[in-house]
Picture 1 (cartoon, rainbow, N blue to C red):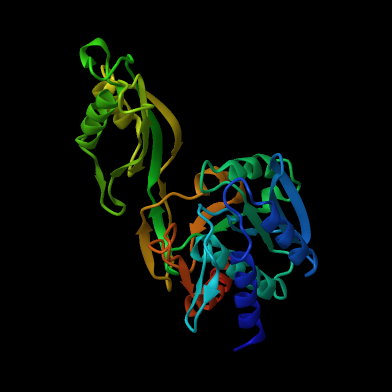
Picture 2 (spheres, rainbow, N blue to C red; picture 1 turned 90 degrees about the vertical axis):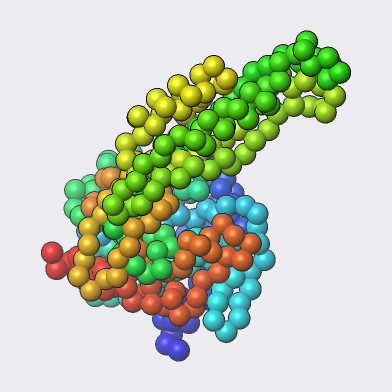
Amino acid sequence: MTSEASEALDLARSLISIESTTGNEAAVSDFLHRYLLGRGWQVETIAVAENRWNLFARKGTPRIAFSTHMDTVPPVLPSGEDEDFLYGRGACDAKGILAAQIIAAEQLSREEAASLCLLFVVGEERNSAGAIAANRWVKSQPFAAGLRYLINGEPTENRLALGTKGSLRCTIEAAGRSAHSAYPELGENAIEKLLDALQLIRRLPLRSHPELGKETVNIGTISGGTRPNIIPDHAEAEVMFRLVCNPEALKEQIAQNTGSLAQVRFDFEVPVVLLKRLADFDSAPMAYTTDIPFLTNFGEPLLLGPGSIQDAHSVHEKISKKELLRGVELYAKLVRILLMR
């Protein structure tokens, strides 16, 4: 194994072992800050919220940005490894990717010292707060006009993404009237109203796209009531749609179908993204969303990364060591191709 390969795996191990669920990214930010300063990168922090910041690192005047996120979903999982895989929360989403990007950038910086920068953000797993702050920040930087390409990292199984679905997250809230459960006619059951509204949402005709596939809907959380002997006066659910086209017509359908039963609040949406093909790269569409729509000031986007999304957010999250090292090679290859354009 080469020294670069060993360094990539060591860095991934270190990152996976640091807890960084969304909102608690400070420890991994500090680690990366020290790591990059020790390797000669000019490092800046971009404030996002109290005790939360992005990291931006560069050497010279960059033309291409590597970017991924530092935060993970809960719960924290113990890290570990065997001969073939690294395990733990963030192994593939996205700390293995983060390590691959850094090692590729280190390799490339010896060849194109003035062409690369690194952007590692907080908050991707919830609301892209880090990406939004970074996009606002970079507009005022003197080098921003020279940025031509953004290589975003998410688990694509080392395939260049043809596009990503969008998302629409909404809260469905039903109101009722509390009463003794022995006399239900005196109350109005908010949970029953919510369930009826959710059933209508599940029956909505969803759309499809020739490359991105079908839209999907997930009822992710549901809550309401206080005791089984009290008619509940409030209930709510969080619902997420994975989109393949503009959501405005869907939003109208949601509001119309639930209007007599519940109130709808549209909390956050991410647009659909279509990306380019490149020769010599395996390609595939991705069903998830990324920070790409919120990083428009960093150049034309591409999406690539080792690891499988099917392992992300699971209790068995892992990344293949071989695939991680192949990711380093592909990141370097992609940058070399882009620099020739």
